[in-house]
Image 1 (cartoon, rainbow, N blue to C red):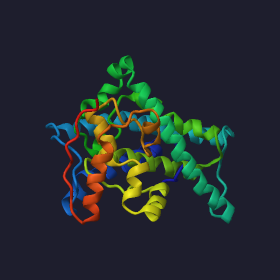
Image 2 (spheres, rainbow, N blue to C red):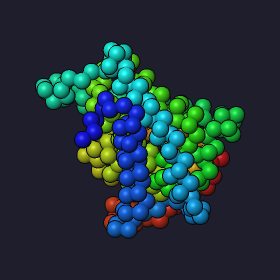
Image 3 (tube, one colour):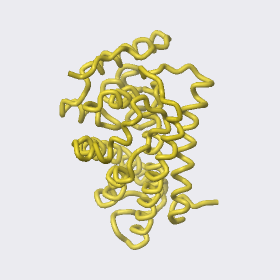
Image 4 (cartoon, helix red, strand yellow):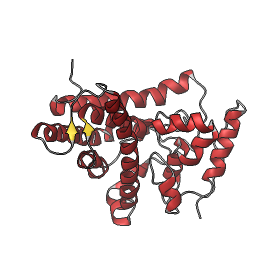
Length: 278
């Protein structure tokens, strides 16, 4: 049986691939076949697109595995704020683990927003990020379908956080497996909110029901619109950075409201027509 962490690059790469391709296959092939889904897309995928996306994800998955291996070596040599004490040995340890997850969400979201803006700087976009935007109607296999240089930039935060707050090694690995699934889900092409698994989403669902998550948390539609309109929607988990920086599409709120009002009434809603941002 593989260890959760400490097994080196081979184990880390296998973990990343299993999580990524299993999640992508479930969301792209299995879920739409067994459950009604509400598309958020206006367009069709290109012939052979899924295979292209799946193949071009291998390099970034290798980069992610290399990052995980580096974190293992940092822990072994005493670098950073990594620890391996039992998470549930006390209530305080368990509470800190929950705090860590929320902190990682906000740190990851901030890192993703600003590096994503950098990736849309014309010279970088043309030579690096354009590879990801070849999929204007993305599929779940598109999550990590990007340049390996972009992978280094995006995944660097998984090392940086080890110096910002104490992080349990097991939690670090499991959390970043989870972020892999979030990237996959964000490209699924149909809406999963408010059932996107996150602590913030769970709390929002308890507090505000169907409507509240749409106002502060990301949806699949949010990132899918970014593939149609690349000058908007750079965030990952939450919408506050896009709102603060003026990069939220003007038609996004209305489109989400239309979707969720249909959900409340028990109806499926087709993708609303959204005009280009202007």
